[in-house]
Length: 286
Length: 266
Image 1 (cartoon, rainbow over the protein chains, first blue to last red):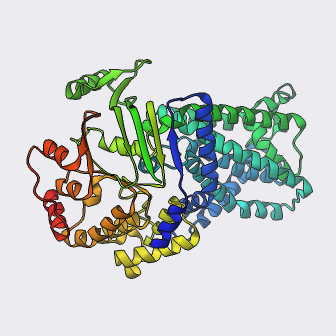
Image 2: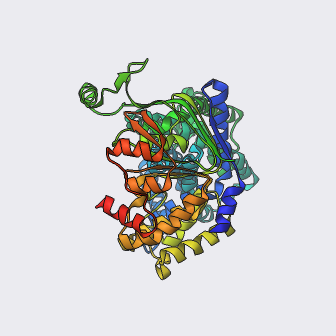
Image 3: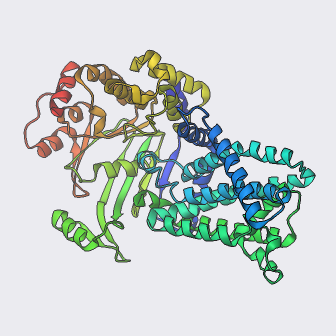
């Protein structure tokens, strides 16, 4: 007890809110939120991890369900679509498996971004915590779900004897870009959804449309040539492709990269400006 | 040196949600006369208005007032949860706000996991968290239950765990809401000593409570809030006498204080 207190006493933080609510002041507070949030990585990780563990506590397979349900979905869809579209299963199934796994990751992040602050209402009202914590927790949770799907991807690689080779390493920086986008979208939608309660259904509809208009279950090459050159304008496609392409052994083209990075910069900038502007109001909105 | 300085703060609550804004407006206007519209014509409730005070090391402040007077809002401002729309706030020192008895407590996690989470919320290092765990286990008398999910605990065990966790970390500035005085008589007697040592250990205490004897025993200064404004501010006894409308008995201490708390809740 005494030692715990000694630790808490060692720091003497000063919390200050001045009447000068200028952009610079707000920006500094937002940066401080980000810094404090990153230093709480241990808590962020623990909360995300416990979310997964609690979801499957008491079930026999535990988080193994994540792996199993993905495997079942991929196998069923693969056989169904190859029969429907008469595509060659050998080429199509690996494409479909990666597309579905990665798209599920992205669309779940976008969906849960809407509720990341609303769900943390109890904590936000009880203790001053960086908002980054709630965004990070959502991201950690989804990265862990994605990690559970890695065995499915490896199984697909083995069954179809695919080796993406060194090209796959390009997926690493692309995935880092996803993580930044994930935090940005959590700030952006988390704040919007706290203020306007009808945003989540709109977001869900947009994601549904995105799913159908983007080459996720259909291959880009099946698109008519006159539409092909418009594909890099689709943020869903380019952002998906920077990770999916390398994992299938094709390096993304320069246009795809430019589009993915460009859209990411845009989202991050908008999210940051919104966060700087609205951070101090979120506690009143939830 | 811990210190709190609050100058002329105003906190407005926007009312965005609800099907009928006009009905709400009428009801609230009739109830308190504190409903107005801000520049963008949103309906707002003024929770605090023009509140100023300063506290230094050794100060013990009690907050009294009716429900809705702004006591909890003021505690949340001091905890940095609500940022006021006007005025400035400076708080030096580590702050612990005991506002929600179940902060971060998850019913499906074991006692041990909950202790770990609370330690992480407080920014403790792994060795400090281990010590926290021992301290909580000893005080809450949980024994082997520490490794069972909290939802299996009896209500007494729940209260003991929540209380042990909340009081294990000693801050410089302690903000406490009145829920803290809940619990059965036998537990209060045990808890009071721990609470008193925590209160004594804090450089600054801000306590919101309805229980006169507690404020009288622990606080040197009392602020009476009414409709978000300071109605009276001064030494504990005169303000409490004005607020309660009767003369105060001599200050209670020790077991008598426990009895007073239990009696006040009954």
